[in-house]
Image (cartoon, rainbow, N blue to C red; front, side, top):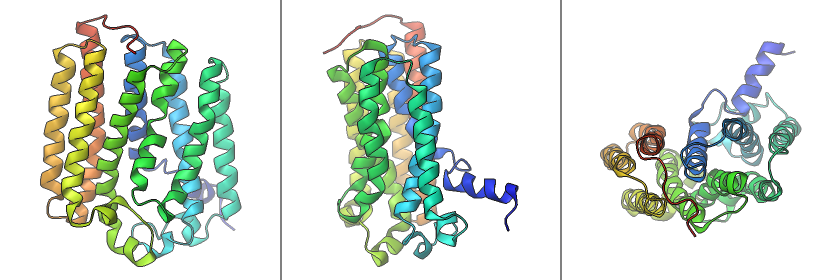
Length: 296
């Protein structure tokens, strides 16, 4: 019999609350959207709803991911101690945890407008289906980018009641960013993934993996710059993008020799890249309030 403390520890590992990097990578794009849509002054209530919803949905996604990968995780060095792989948690429990967390997340957005409620349906589908794309999709990281960035259209919908074209550009930029950082992550597991037969961008890109990562960084930052132009942002925002570019160049230094530990370090370091863009955006709105209120 496991104690309550041990049980809670297993659930913490199932939902990855002990590894908050995923929450942050999901949170930064959502905050970018809220600051753009809110003209630098989004409602604190809406910000709080989306921040808590991010934690809940990322945790639910991790539970579904471990359920989907329960037959694979035991064969991968980095994941063999996950609670479903070791049998510490039953697969049905993982499904129940994901369902409860998803319902809690849905309850959070009930005070928001109808468009947000409708958008929550594809958001839920994306979060639940992503883990299964590794069986057939050559670059599942792109699908992850849509799932991790869907807070962007939802954020605009919550504040504006509509989703402008600029929001979809921001989402596209997030897709490129997700392919960049999750390819770095996939480079760590590539030997094991090849053995068990699942698909990742690191395998698909092959010897062009490093070049692909850098291209995706360039594409994402270019799109973020375009969105900044549409919102008439000032030099502080672009200075933040320039610092983010410097971080991406540092990542090249980490991954160019494909050392697994350094690739994982680059992946974790993407928190600083996303945070830098957000800080630049916040400071820019603080110093230069106003801008384009509703780009097409």
